Length: 477
Image (tube, rainbow, N blue to C red; front, top):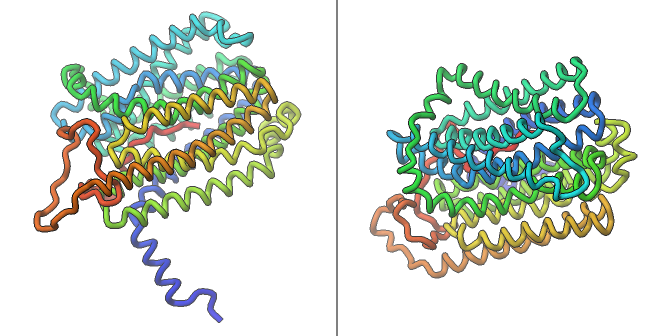
């Protein structure tokens, strides 16, 4: 007796055919994410074997803060370049240069502010000397540069160069961490130097490999054009910050409230969760252009993206629940004793994150970024407050449980709210007569607050054959 009837197999084939664009683009980007993540795990495994836990904890916290300051410096400029680079082909180099200058200057300034204010945050001083301070400020500016230029490469449909930079960066820092240990280095400064040097050299090598593809994006800064597009930057900025900032702050909170040694163990599982979260983030991101390209299949594609992402997140959560101590021991035999079983529930926060990613995509499809951002911001503040309260009351396990519960509740509420916005927008939109051919909608000329319901949007957005067009910022493990 056959396990599957011909009718069931036909339905499966039809479902796959309908979601071909979503699965193809998500699969390609997922493959790049997995390769980069594997090299990132190798880096931190080697670092955990060669450096003391306190140095690992301090370095992980500093790198998280650098990521946060880079994101704040980016200030939505990278997302702007993804959508607008193709509209200003003759001025794209000036626009990218202006965005890069602004982002790096803002990130460096925020880095200086953090250096001055850091002693006020707690007993664990992360900026221990002048060398650490200079590396931290330069690293914050470099992070902003990487975010903006990576998005510019995607905006000019040169995603291959971006992925190449990620892989080369991961390979370089993996080699450099081994060389640093052989040279006798044993503190967080060496880890920061491998990260920064790897990023700088990777951009140089990618530029050479692409015959000046990176330099072609940089010209005389066109601040006038950037000023003209400032309102679009602000629409994306708040949503980006609300979605990504809390996750970058948590490792720093562990150092401040608990100890750098505790953060060394926490950072291992946190890195695993962040890497796993990249998969549903990719699915949700690729969903944006796929829905624009095929509005008739939008409901099906959304259901496939959300369903696959939730299944994947559940599998990862169960894996962490069962094997959290074994994961810690694989990095350093001392880590299970440091963290105990406190991290076993952290994987379930992936379910809430998956819901948040898809709610964010609904908001962007609905042109409701400004309307949704306050709720995402409120949720991000609540996440951090509950994490702090949990750490104060129950140590590391209290932080993990508090964070997981609030992220899950927030994700469910965000999806319900975004679905309501989509439904209300669809209900208020007059029906199309069908007698006139649909014309693409220009986002530059749209009125503030105007929404296009995501599930019956007529505006096409072609996904380049063989290419990948995404709007989310990549994450390097």
